Each structure stands twice: as C-alpha cells, then as structure tokens.
Image (cartoon, rainbow, N blue to C red; front, side, top):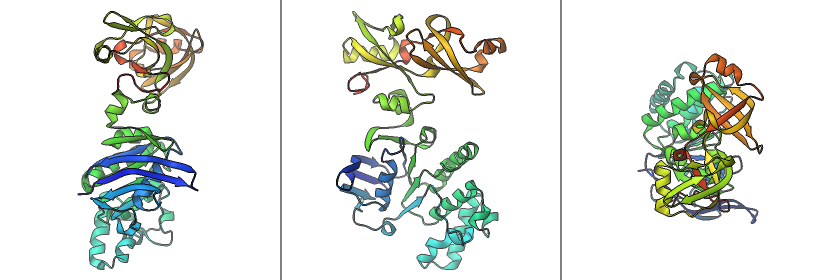
Length: 371
C-alpha cells in the first residue's frame, strides 16, 4: 500500500502569508493524482510538504498510514523528480542514477541490475557513460526519472518535470510517463500548470487557486461539471465563454436570453434545473468554444481574429454590445472558400444548444447544477 492522506494541512510563511489553506485530500494506493493551477496557487508547496522539503505549519500528512510530519525526506520512502532535473554535472548518467543506491550501501552488482533495467525502460542505455551536459533536455529528464525509479519508493512525486521541454518533446514525454506509470504500478503525485498534462495523465485532478482547493475530480468530471467559475475557465482550451444573462422559467421549462436570443435549456441540464428547482434570475452563462456553431441565423457577431490551428479554427468574435467570444470549429466542416471568407470584419451568426450550457451564481461563482 502507498496511500497518501492530508488532513487540514496548512503552510504559513513569516506568520502571516498563508500559502496553503486547510488542504484535505485522500490519495489511494497506485492512484495518479495531478495538482494543477496557475503560478503561485500553492501546488508545488503542497508537493514539497509531502516530500518533507517544506515544514507544515499545521495539520497531518500520512504516507501508507504513518504520520510523517516529523520524518526527514530520506525516511519517507518517496522519490522526487524536479523541474530542473537536479543532476550532478561531474557524474556520468550511470553514476547519477546509481547515486542514491550507493548511499544505501547496496552491492554494486545489484546497483548494476537496477540501473541498466531503468535505462532500458527509459531508452537511455546508450547514454549511460555520458555526462549530463552531453544530453538533450528530454534525455536529462529521463535520467532524473531513472534516478527516482531505482529507489523502489512507495510514492513518486513529480514537480513540473516537463516545463523546460519544447512542445513536441512535452507531448512525447507525456506518453512516456503514461507508459512508465503502468510499468512502475505505484502512487504518483504530479504538479503542473499545464491543464493538458493534467487532463491526459491524471486519474484525479486537484485544481488549486490561491492555496485553496477549487475542485477534486476525474478529468471528465472537472470538464463536464466544473464546480465553479474558476474551474470552468481554467479547464479547457480555449477557455469557456462566460456572459451575463437571465435565467427565465415558464411553467416547467427554462430559457436563457443571451444577446436578446431566447434559447431553451433542454436535455440533462434542463432536467437538473427542474430537479433542483433553480429560481429564475440573473446568472453567468458558460458555453465552450467547441459547442458554438456558425449558422445562418442566431447571435450576430463580427470576426476579429482567425487563428488557423491546423485541423480547427479558433475564431475570436465580438457581439453588438462588444462582448468577446471564441468559437472553435473543425476545418473539415468548411470549404476553402468558406475559410477564405473568414477574414477580419466578416459578419457571422452563432448558435448553441441549451444542453451544453453551464450556469453560475454571479455572487458566489458556484455552478448552480452542482451539489
């Protein structure tokens, strides 16, 4: 077992700056959990408290059922991969990976077996006699992961391990981390500011802001039912469109009226509004760019920017009251002539369905459909 439990964990700097507020989380054995949020939200601080690299100001951390508040990092049976690799520049790749094993006085033949096996899994066997300066960023990151792998730790911690890599290499390393997780079959806690990494890697995501947990859930749960406005805008690219409008109830039916267009809220969303007996009134209406369609009639808009993204277009438009919106549309649905007509100043119409809408309280910013 390698569960991690955090109960009311708090981090305060200089007796006044609260970096992490009453953090409660129960991570199951062999679960892959990702802490995600903008810079300064407390995600790396939380990870470092689990590792023992930061003292906690209050609360309790348990690893495998044991309270570790007062244990040194070396006694917590965790392995950590840092953002900047933290390799010894004067050592070969082999010696970097073997370093922690030698500190444990493990026999050299056993060290050889562990290092070569890790190198084979990570595809760095041919680089074992090189120094870190002779490696690319992706190769250095593999070495850092290999050094953590050979320790056979209960918990694997990763602090923004891909942030120093270019986009192509990040995609490749993401896939390799998914495969590595299957081979190691241990508990992973991963920190990133990149929501794409969070969505593709995690069993569960912990979304943070200003030291608070905004939502904990599977990638699908956080995307389909964001608990609040922050999560709604943070998860998804491009971010969700948010507009002020009114929720109207007529008998047993609900409608919204964005930009003067009356749209019925149907499907599961309408059923939930009825089940919760949500009152009519002013709301913040959310709808994702991919759920908006170009149409012959609907909400009139003017095209401002057309971003060609290969298989799709990101259209930045503004309404008659100058509200900015983003539309994400597949290029396969458009002829070449259609794409050429999508130029600055083009007059378009948008439509979207009630079943894809999200509804937020304008004061609390909470999702009206969440418990």
